Length: 109
Image (cartoon, rainbow, N blue to C red):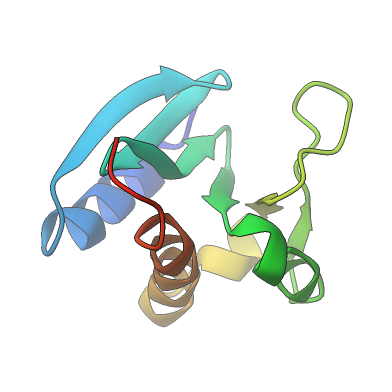
């Protein structure tokens, strides 16, 4: 399975409630684009988040978060979150809000 469909549906539902979202296949999974920027996504069982430089270290210090190293090299500003970190609705919403905070600070593409 290239990505967790259940997680993708949950992310889609949370984002679509307030934002215009486009989906794009990326990183071997599914990415959710907001204002033309990658916001978050799903790769295998992992939630992928774009948190930006300012929140990067803080995000990595949270439980179940780790460096996104899709290419074998650290992708600064992006983190993976393991299933234990996004399992509840509150946890998933918290992570998505962190990613949205960064992406909505960028000028639309």
